[in-house]
Length: 387
Image 1 (cartoon, rainbow, N blue to C red):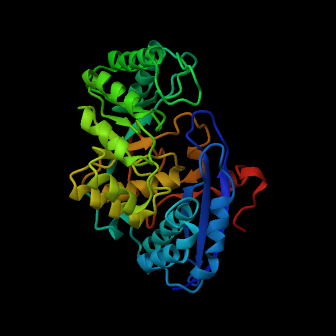
Image 2 (image 1 turned 90 degrees about the vertical axis):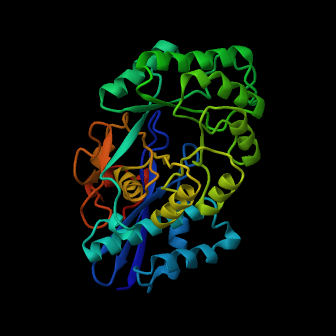
């Protein structure tokens, strides 16, 4: 089997509180008629566009003629070819992610097996999800609590809230120091959620790397009585030493990894003792195979993996295959509760999310396909579809 062509397009639209609902999709075509589809991140709100698509298409000549079964060789060939262009960072690593996922889709379809069987089989079928929640109309402890209860009523046993842009008491929009008034407000919000849901529902808090070191330590210590599932990215992701200091200063569980790429970034986190939980985004961290390498590396350090996820159903199912095959899986994020068209974009076993879980597909390949009609209607900024 040989790859004969590569096509890509950008699909989606920015939705409030979506975490970035514009994705780059690619299709790899083969001489045996099998087509593999992969999804990757487009860059996030404010930067979503065609950079990842162009990176994918720039790799076309390196892909045509290759045997798609040579997944690891192709990945390394592309990574090394792009080394001086930043292949360990966006947008090239995003493009590599989508290509790797599409290769796995082809091989699974060719062999008639789901992707998780290519990864050594599964530890679980049901992938437990946590609901990313938003406070709604009012930035208050009661509003946060109400939103958490809505997610619990939908079957989710874990919820997450953002606390880095509340606005209460913020004296300078550019300063990452949290003043007394803002700190009191943030802690009150988290207390409001914990009071609403009790201690039998897991609660995670996200800071998006927006706090400086002293503020992060103060917050982590203040939240210790609330027994968080984790405190996420309390300091900027690029400063691993600062994150290690936060972790050493508190009993609050520290999570990071959304903005780390490939196993090499995660190796630094582990070697410096910077986190308790990792959250690679499997739509941009390197792909299905690299996701397994990251999970295995984490497992060797006794660290659980709880991937960040703002993907479509296709990208989310790709993540589910990896998490089904990883013994140290903890939770997978679900960030699409407020996107009305999310489920319609793809075909597969629906509903994709049931009672707070996503069941890994038993269909050959990834097991989820784009709905061509809906996808065409959601093309980003005048883009054209694969054909």
